[in-house]
Image (cartoon, rainbow, N blue to C red; front, side, top):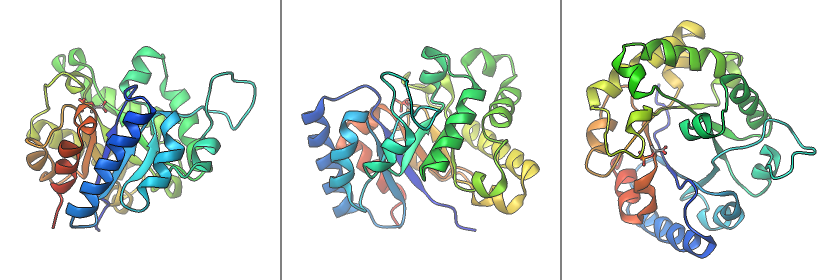
Length: 254
Ligand code: PEP
């Protein structure tokens, strides 16, 4: 089974419109010239950029949003629906990033609803899970991750689960410069795949792309992505530099 290799950038709340177009154009040009292989490059940008980027990216760099609302439409001032995101040409949406869980109190149950609405609208959820430093240090991280999976995405049937991507992002490694070692990341990715096999079956588990996120950069990407159960990365800070992001994408060059 060959699962998709994916390098997805998460720009978070950075870059005004002109800056976003400029950085994205650079990324598309470098990736078009230098990527060799079938790995997918994705940029998850703020909402205001999505319409333009989707038109500039073509097949070279796919576009994702960083969040969506859990309802189809309605009186939810300030929110953006999965249908709207899809309508501008986006293919992906990040759901459950730890910053959404932490600063916007997004629960597993809410994230489960967002996942369903994203799938119903033809978007691929990049569903994030990850433990805090305390949870890593007190040894409860496997329980925490299992509960995030169980309550967030294991309510999906196998057919729908097969359409999502999981991102393991240890909270202590996001934006801190502290990367999980390749062994720490592989241990968790293998655990996640085992849990997916137990819930669904081995073929679903084998086909699921599981990305690593947390201070991934061009220097550490090769060792991380060489691990058996790591299928790419969700990249924050390094996706704001075209050369760095493209070099991470090139880690998978054949
Ligand atoms: C992220 O925000 O998803 C992330 C992984 O950030 P960074 O790469 O900056 O740690």
